[in-house]
Image 1 (spheres, protein in one colour):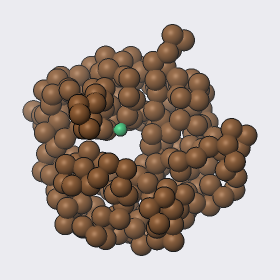
Image 2 (spheres, protein in one colour):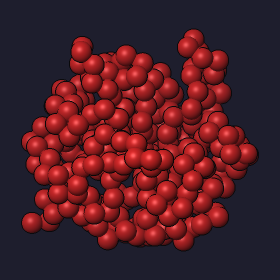
Image 3 (cartoon, rainbow, N blue to C red):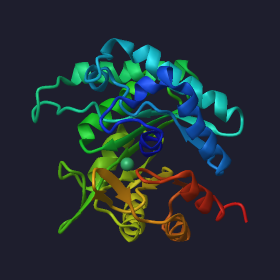
Image 4 (cartoon, helix red, strand yellow):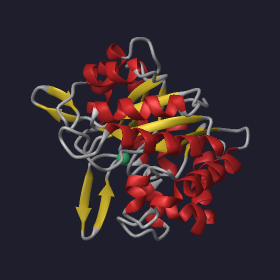
Length: 276
Ligand SMILES: [Zn+2]
């Protein structure tokens, strides 16, 4: 979503969630393109929809408005042809004891966002790009208590000499056990700036082992981000991206999507594996 909105004119670092009310036509055009590409899950344009992140855009008091609008836009496009995932990203700070954010306040912010997404018509909540398992735990618990029937929790992992870890040094098994205990219904990985598609195949196998039987979702980037001038580029073509799908499935992935750099063309190439 972020990549697509930037192509439609959103300045890097600007609050894309404001477009849910300022440019609803552009947001819906992205949903329509993914639906036409064969996507069966549409993700709302609400990644930075907590009061914490919105505060940076002068919109901390607009949590209900912007998240409900985001869910409604996706819902209207999806109809009964796709599910709507209400998207929740990190709150953008650090919890105690690493930072000064209080768990109760962060939890309340996630609860507020999840409630608004569900009120706008989201079928499920997708918590993604998490690095701190304690934060992910709060987000899962808050989404469940807000009434979400199905909560997906995914982390961003990096490749280290010791194996795949979040930025906080958390292992795959540690990360997943935390969100599973908190009530997550599906678990997995998304984004991952330094991860290749081959990494994602190996990571998927590790996720499946740690998922305790829950469905595993993987949403790789379209390759590693590369700076070209002032633009961020992703080099994996749609065909290269799609070619890894059978290996992800063989490794046990049950839901496959794309994160940064993935375009409707990438999704269309991927879905060809399911519609044969
Ligand atoms: Zn991403």
